[in-house]
Image 1 (cartoon, rainbow, N blue to C red):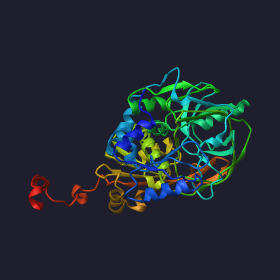
Image 2: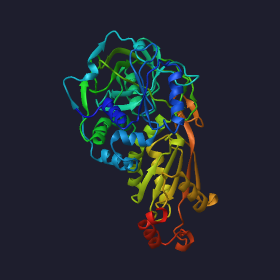
Image 3: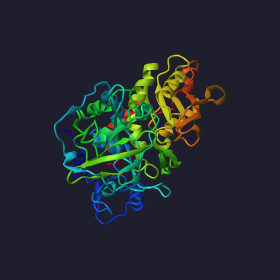
Image 4: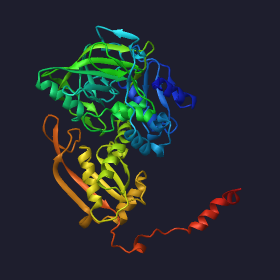
Length: 459
């Protein structure tokens, strides 16, 4: 069996990067408040938090696992600078999952289910209730049987009922296909999985492509799956907790508000409902809570997960694209930065259109030359300041399909919205003389000599 969540946590602890909170903590606001304070503290930001006693619940809670890109890299066993390349390699060399007869995720079976045994947390002041926030949702296309994996949010309604907000992507399409035939959509919600699975869930693959195969590419070995007890699906065998159920057709209940990745509240809506049929878990299970609004965990997972597929999409349109980045400050959704080696005018715009086509939440694309480090926002600011001219290099496309989680979008129906898209071409004009944009710097040979003699200066 490949590494699981608890083995990742053991590596963090061996590195002195796991902080145990041993006093009782309230899952309503207090746990999230501690996570928020720890994220803002430079001494604690690089620590994963383990809350050993959560009031009213049987399971401890893991938190602040994804609040920095470096933590994701550590969990995957790579350098932060390698995340994009590792993600692209996983897409190009997927490892399909394999079924096994049994797994630790089913050591305890709760039928009938009672969600109240789980430490569901309320993270933001106006949240409509406690939420499942790190749920890896597994569904199957009702027509083809192809699996989809994605992260959705689930609000507690009753001991056997959860609300669900489905992003307008592949799981939502599965639900619409089932609902058209008056049938429920089986769903399994795995909580407490290896970080590679959550990252892969954000890869934005084509419809009917399996994110778990991409997760195997990240892990370097197939993900092991077990058959669910009450629904016709397979789930990661090493998951800490699995909630089995079905999304009911033609049933809606009030869901929200919820503190979202944009650091604002997603509004309350009448949304579908999951009827929970069973809960299975490990004997000594851990619960994973992800915070979206005050700790940028959703954004970090999204950034690492969405960039590899975005890179492939824009590179397919413009082969000289060298890197892409979705900054955390935009929720890793609204902004995309693209670096390319421009050979003809118009390539920046073409790359931007490819980005818009690939991910509907992207609304602002900034394209720079490949001598700009797009992971250093001060470098991007430099390109905007010195290479962008608004009357020539700014493009606005009105009324494009957007996403209702964008607070600036026009939601014209439940779950459907439009927004204006923006392209900023911050690349050097090809007609400009080379000396016009030549960096002022110390001669390379002098810098090399200084580097060689560095101890002499401060010895």
